Every structure is written in structure tokens, then in C-alpha cells.
Length: 284
Image 1 (tube, rainbow, N blue to C red):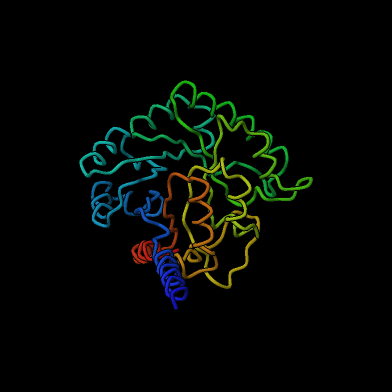
Image 2 (spheres, rainbow, N blue to C red; image 1 turned 90 degrees about the vertical axis):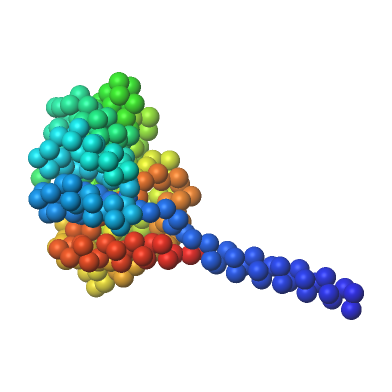
């Protein structure tokens, strides 16, 4: 009997630990927001849109457009609301031809990252497109890092996953871009859309991804490598095809720094609060 009692105590303690682990939040922080989600609203009234996001609890922003204002004006509006911009998205041409201006705007906004989300190309995306982007990213990334202490990130869009040698053109870009100057923002929808597992990709390159776009793809939709799908196919997080818990576990293990909701749906304003609720309800 004396031996049974300690065993029961150990068993009960073990069960308590399992229950506690099952109730640990997987995503503790409030997600950030990419301005593209609220692009229609921002284009009409930047201040009012920030008020809406502030009321929802959003503090971390990725701006990919200045919406007819200036970086200084947006920074003032953010500061007044206790919000901040961590990443500044720009077009490929501006990154290459206006690197200093891009850097100045990013620093004015308070951003630590500069992001590009599209490589100009004639479909299908090919080796020469990847090679040009690699050279441009390494050059601009070096300027941004060494002269301005900014980190450049490339946001994948799907077309980069065409097969190449024993991997893909995306693998080739990873290998050829200098990790000191070029990091990545993983868009999990566009990754999944090509048939690639986002969690597996993060595990493959755990030190290269610094930012993430949180999105989900409508059930029943089949993907391809075009980098495009109707905006209505963006659905509330957790209601689509992506395995969000597995992806977020991989992201946390890899130390991804910022997570932005990107919802391109016409009813984003209805979907975003539900997506936030889903993230905050996830448990280990």
C-alpha cells in the first residue's frame, strides 16, 4: 500500500502537467496587421482606419503604401495611438532605384524591416528572373543593413517554387542570397498554394524567415504557381485548408519576429475579428 500511494501521487501530478500543457496558448501576442488588408479604408482616411485597428487591439503594423500621405505623417498618427510600424513594404523598382529614399521612409516610420513582395517577370518565373532578383536583393540588402541598420525581406508569392535541379527556384534564391543582407517573409497561403508545406519550409530554413503573413485558403480551392487567386478565396483563419497550429509551432521554434494578418477578401472587416479570435484560442 505504501508503494501504491506515491505512484498515485506521481500519476496525478503527471496528469496535471498534461492538462496544463493542453491549455497553454500557442499564440500569446496580438497579431500585427498589413495595411493591404485595410487598403480601401486607408485610401479614404488613414487616421480613422488606425482608430479602428487600435480599438481592436492592433499595435504592430506593416505599411506597404503611404496612401497619399508621408512617412512622417503616418508615424505621428501611429505614435498618437501607441502603435508602431515594424515593416515597410515597397515595390521592386523602388528598392533598386530609390534605395536611399526607401531607407529614409522606413526609418521615419520606425520600421526595422524593408519588404518586397513581387519580382517583375514574364510567366513562368525562370532562372534568369531569380538570378536578377538575387543580385538586386544582395546589393540593396547590403546598403540597407550597412548604411541604415535595416533588414531586407523578400515575401514569396508562389511562382518561385518551380522545380530547379534537386529543389526549386526558391531553394536556389535561398542559397544564393546572402543571409547577412537578405531575409524572408513567408506568406503561408502562397506557399501552400503551390503544394509546399509552410511548416516544413520554415523547418528547412529556420534562420531565414523573420516575418509572416497569416492567411488561410478556402476549402476546395486548388492551387498552382501563378501567384494569384480570387480574393474571395481568403477566408477566416482556421476555416480553410492550412494547418495553422503546425505552422505557428514551426514559426515560434524558428523565432519569426512579426506576424501580420493579410486578408484580401472583400469582407475583411468581418473576417479579421474572427481570425484574431481563432489565433487567441489556439492551445498547445
